[in-house]
Length: 216
Image 1 (cartoon, rainbow, N blue to C red):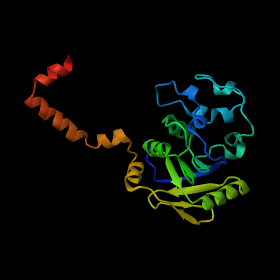
Image 2: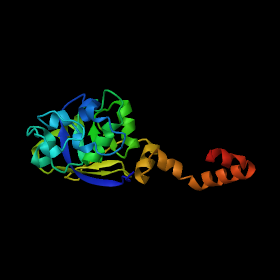
Image 3: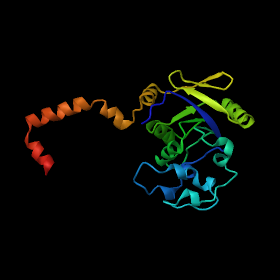
Image 4: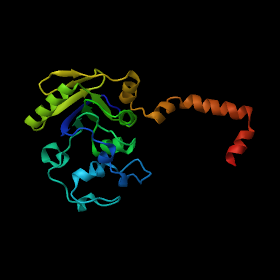
């Protein structure tokens, strides 16, 4: 998982409340057992005018010119600004996968669905919660200033606006530690790889018949 320390990125506004995970990545794209390839179908039913199917070449699709992520001024955005209860609906982990694979590194919203919120941290996305009034002000500023970018400093737990003003945010200490170091659940376990190997070697020395059992 890519560490998150300081990130500066263009902001794209998703001006809808209660965006659910089926909108983020529609159900027909959940058939893959891989953890890659979901970015092209992020917000699929909103990004395209035609119905998409798994494996279809995005270049053959008809983009919706009115959808925010298809507008030229938001191309390359890596911070998504959203309204309340973002990520509600089913608990599919594919939703943060699709957001991350599209290029987003952070989300800013007044609130998130709990399971989606937890899944973001496990997959390298930083979901920041700010008061609704601050989020509304950011929507106004993004609309008013093309190229609007924010700097997110996770170590200091602040968002730095273009004028230098800082918006502090909270993040649970363990989640912050994992993001700063790029640790997902597997990475956390592998910190103890030497101890695990030593334990396995000692166990086999005491019970050598287990080696034969493991080999079948």
